[in-house]
Image (cartoon, rainbow, N blue to C red; front, side, top):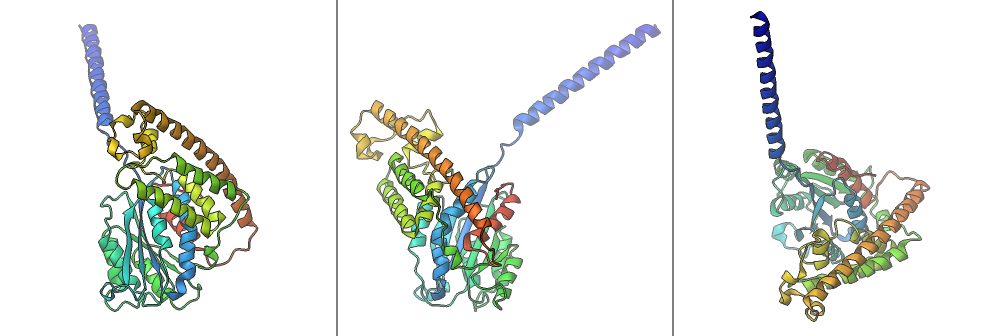
Length: 386
């Protein structure tokens, strides 16, 4: 009986283990099935620029360096969605009741629209209410409510940050912190400037970073032997876009206009823009049929209302339209590859030139923004390499 009892006990133990293993496996399998999909990464970036008389260098830097900043963000792992908003302040032609602050652009992923607004900015004398523009950006923009989104304000200027008679730095910072928005300040002056104290205090109160920049040096884009070819390839990319809908004509015209603005700012700027256009952050998923096809190989152009198509496609048979889009998609991929290869060579050339230059205490507009964004994006799980 003892032998039988021991055998029976062993059988019961084995059965119990199998049941438990089955339960654990089922539980594990269930947990795997129910595990939430990883949240996509996003950066929301509001740039507030002083447009008073002495800020020509800052505005020129923003125009020259927008594409370099975007190219840095495009290297983030995982690649984030980037939404950009733009404010200007310090112009006496703006309404007094707003504190001479103007919202130029709500959050958008349309980088051509951002560049268009930047090139439309002009400088004029006036009172620069730093706290007011920060409060406006915090309160007026459609910021995400998700904690995993990096929400950042950069406010740039060169006068005391404490001029606002109505909104204090403490009040502006408190509004931002309450909504999970970080405020970084950029002083366009010397490190030893007595005005630095207020700019530092605002950054500290709003859990951001302070930087001091040389605004004139930041307006100069480094030129390389690869710039001309990159600019040409960037122009050829335009031929692969098939915009649809009410905004089609405007999107195409704006794309060409921003190519021209970049070229006017210098070959280095045009080359950086070409790199952006070939990257992950320059896309019109809702308005470009070629992008739709690249994102979904099963996309069927025949399902698009004929009235929304450009005239060139309306004249084609449905089967020919699909073949035309596939040809353009192949052309875009080839151009993107060539631009990526040349951009890598361009970046290596610039890095080598930078190593040979004497470093100064002050940063430039784009280096200040890129350095801070690297640090702050890392806290949200986005790794942006140097």
